[in-house]
Length: 340
Length: 292
Image (tube, rainbow over all chains, first blue to last red):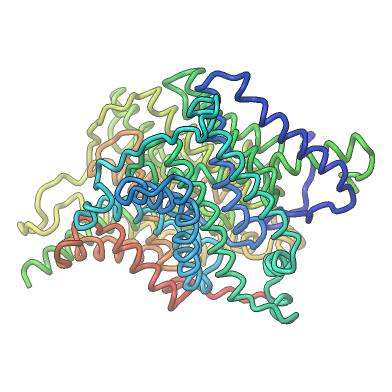
C-alpha cells in the first residue's frame, strides 16, 4: 500500500492551522472567492442550485467539525440541529411572514440554545456513549416534528412549503443565482468566523480539551463550560445551514431530517478532513455529488457503488482531503517530510 | 395486571431479538474497540445465504451450520482485506468504512435477492408455549438460543487459552504481542466470531421480522441501545440490556398515554440516556480508568 502512514491519533485533526504561510493561504482564498463569484454566470441554473446546496452542506459539516475536529466530541445528532434550523426558518417565513434573511439569526439562536442545553448532560458522556445519546436526538427529531399536538406549528407529516426569495433591488439575475450569492456571502462570513475562532484563545482552549482534557483542566480551562459552549456553537452553525437549506429547497418535512442526514454529515466530515475548515466544503461536494454519481452508474447497485467509492477515498486519504492536500503540498514543496 | 404481564412477556419476546443483536455488537466491540455499524447488514447477508441454501433443497440445520461457517470465514475475510490496512487510520475513518460496508452489503443483497419480503422457516414452530397466549415456541426458542450462546461465549472466554489470548489482545495489544499472541489474527478471529453470532441472530430474527435487505435497520438500533445500556464491556450485560430495551419499549407503548405509541422509540432512547447519565459505562460495564 502506498497509503501515507498516519499516527494513530484518536481524532486525527488540526495539525493546527499553519500560520507560517499566510500569503499562500490568502491567495487560495481569493482565488476561491473569485471562482465562486464567476461560476453561476457560466453554469445552468440547476448546477447553480446544486452548488448552493454544496455550500449549505459544507456549512453544516463545518458545524460538526467544530465539535468533533476541534473539541473531540462526537455527534450523530446534527441532523436534529439542521432540522431545527430548517423548521425555524420555515415557520418564521410561513407563519409569521418574516423576510428570509431574518430567519438565519433566529435559527442560529434557537440552535445555539438547544445545542448548549444538550451539551450540558452530554458532559458526562464520552465516545460511543455520547454517540448513542446524540443518536437518540437524531431519532427523536422526525418523530417530534410529526407529533400531533405540534401539527399546527410544524405542519405534521406534510411539512411546510415556502417561497423562493426574489433578488432585491431589481438585480439582473434569477432567483437561483441570487440565492447562490446570498448563501456564498453567508458561508464566507461563517467560515471566516470559524477560522478566527480556531485561532483565538477560545479555539486553543477547545483544542486543548480535545488533546488532553485533564491537562487542559489543570491549566485552568473551564472544560465543562467550553465543551457545552462548543456544542452550542456547533449547533448554531449547523442550524444556520439548515435554515439556508430550507430556503433553497423551499420545503421542509420531518423525514428529510432523519439520522441518515447525520450519517451523511459524518461522511462529509471524514472525507473532507476532521479538523480542517476548508475541508468541510470538500465534504459538502462529496456528500452532494457522489450519491448522484453512484445512482447514475447503476440504479440497482447505487448503495454498493457509493460504498466502494467511499472505501477507496478512505484508503487513499485516511485522514481526509485536508490531510491528503497537506501531504501533497508538503511533498511538492519539500517543506514537510511525511515519513520520518 | 393481566395487561402488564402480557406486555412484559411480549417485551421479553422482542427483547430476545435485541439481545441476540446486542451480544453480536459487544463481541465485535471487544475484539476491535469500535461499534460496527455494518453488523446488522452482515447478519442480514448471512441469513440470505441460509435462505438460499434452503431454497436449493438443503435441510434447515445443514443450512444453519453452513451459513454460520460461511459467515465466520466472511467476517475474517472482511477484517483481513478491508480493515487490516486501516488499523492505523483514525477512528472516524474506520467508522466511515463501516458505513461504506453497510451500503455495499445492503445494496448487494437487494441486487442478488431483490427487495421482496421473504418468509424464513423456524425450527421451533410457532405454537403457543404451554397453551398460554403470552409467548410462542419460536420466541421461547429464540430466548433459549440466546442464553445458550451467552453460556458458550462465557465458557470460551473464561475457560480456553484462545479466549484468554483474545481478551489479552483486546485489552492491551502491545503487551499481548510481547508475550507472543498474534494480535492481528485475534482481531480477525473476533470479526469472524461476531459475524457468526450475527448469522445466528439473523436466522432467529428472520422468521419474526421477515427476510429482506432492510430487515435489520430497527433491530440493530435497539441492539446497540441494549448493548450500551448493559455496558459494552459485558456480554451478559448486553443480553440483559437487550431484554430490558424490549420490555421498556413495550411498556412505554402500552402504558404512557397519548405519547406512548408514537414516541415509544424516543422514550426508550431517552430512558437509556438517562441511565447513562447516572452510570456512564452502562449498567454492568467496567469503568475504564486510564493512567495520566
